[in-house]
Length: 408
Ligand code: SF4
Image (cartoon, rainbow, N blue to C red):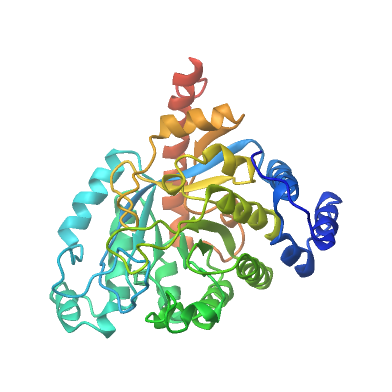
């Protein structure tokens, strides 16, 4: 590894010993590991990689997805956001029903399995014109429209996963009927980031208490759920660990956190944080390793490859097991300057690190037969998409190895 040597506090050494013995990581040890640097950081990454190997094996995964920015109107104003628009601002856009149909057809033809609906927070509470637009399409709210769009995605053979910001339990229950999973990045539990001059000051929906409450409610509703950390928005290493510990506690209550995204801030010229430093690769690797060691083994740890194009092998060495959604059809609307990698290139990078790469569904296997987690009406669509993915994989495997016993 490429870390400089540094003297480690005794607490870091003791925490590493705790991990090496395979003991459940205490909160105290996890917080101590936030200070791992130099040789201790190397050891931390190696321990996380070993934990990943034991829990997830040597095959890494990604979800072939189509990214659907249903609307980029949002009532919040996060200082790092390039996605949000106000009504009338250049680039403001809400996808129409006709547009959704076209993109679903393209996605299905390109082999996507996931329909990722990602949008701004409850824009109808702030923008009258948007509300009128929804009504002209026969929908009273964003959630009404999402419910309709989810059903349409299912008709097109795609499995919806929605991240619509803050939702009420009633909204989540409705969306559970047409989504195999829902998501909300916790980002960080630090209230400090909401203070004046900090990136969440103008974002009421980024208050940690609000996001923790929704994540807990998703558990109470038995919804397979995606959470995540956002790195590089002014948080400390310790605050990252506190965020991971909060996600772990919520998962231990609800058993519903299927994956945690470790996402790094990337600067863009148009945002208030345009001059803020981006987290270095090793800093992202540190967070990935801590996520692997703090979270229970069954929780998938993911980092987006398009935001870390030069660090794939480093992140694999830090314990990552998943690359998240990669789209052959649509750009990353949140980070438009960072194109998805070609699957063949990513596969080659994984192979160099000694790993395979396979597509997966947007619901992890353990939730398929965990009572109450997948709506009954979705059992058929999930089985059919899983069969399609298996067939495609079989054909791809045959191309790699020159034979396929099942599908010729
Ligand atoms: S990051 Fe999300 S919540 Fe914040 S302004 Fe952008 S779209 Fe809105």
